[in-house]
Image 1: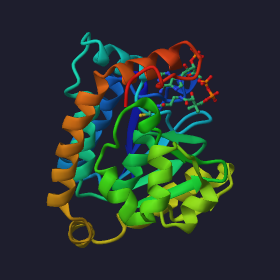
Image 2: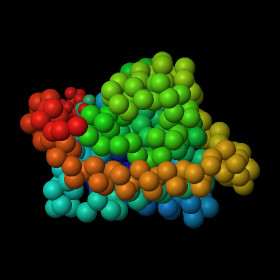
Image 3: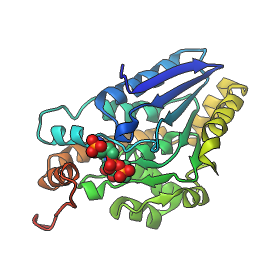
Image 4: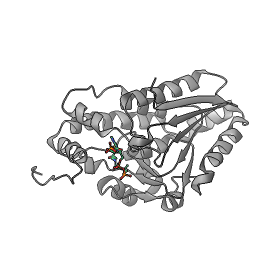
Length: 257
Ligand code: COA
């Protein structure tokens, strides 16, 4: 388990709270593992009817820990497990998933929302998928699910230009259920989770299954996963991670097209 992920179960709701606010809840391998374990437990534990994700501090999550990406890029750490397993697990979840998002939701912080069933945003929420800026490719089947949800043009701007999607725009284009003041965010999401606990679990699970093309999602995750692994080891990706660590903009022009 990770000291940076707290899991609590009460009244049929498993609440998974990211607790690494000093690093904007950037996700380490241990944090991904804790989140995967929580989701796996929820699938088999009859006392859990809904899973609710939230993050402490001013950001939901800054996405994958970029120091971890850098060590995967230079081969010091395995690319398998961690993020890969979490994405696979959230893609297969059968129970309802609810998310409460404030501040920045970067990378997997946004792509995981495409696998959540109810998403609540604070007014300051910003969804950011800077995969191309990091010389990577989209993950978590987001290359399929995001354009499906918001159209190619908006999805491409988010992926290729790293354009943030502000809360109001995210609500307008179907990425969220409601935007609320930050002080009301957790209550809004928790109330929704409690409402789901009172619905027939079998019916909820089948409805979710009918609404999602599991085969297609899994196939796209596999395709993205192998490209992502290749891209992680490219000189461009190494430049992007070094630039973040050195707090400077990356220079991709030194690499040939
Ligand atoms: N991985 C590792 N550390 C991260 C991180 C990440 N993804 N995101 C933020 N941090 C760390 C910073 O290095 C900094 O650490 P320090 O205080 O030890 O220097 C701390 O969290 C605060 O981040 P900072 O950049 O100062 O906060 P900010 O409010 O100015 O900006 C973000 C917040 C999220 C916009 C910015 O940190 C960011 O762009 N992070 C990278 C996001 C990213 O590309 N994720 C990968 C997606 S695939």
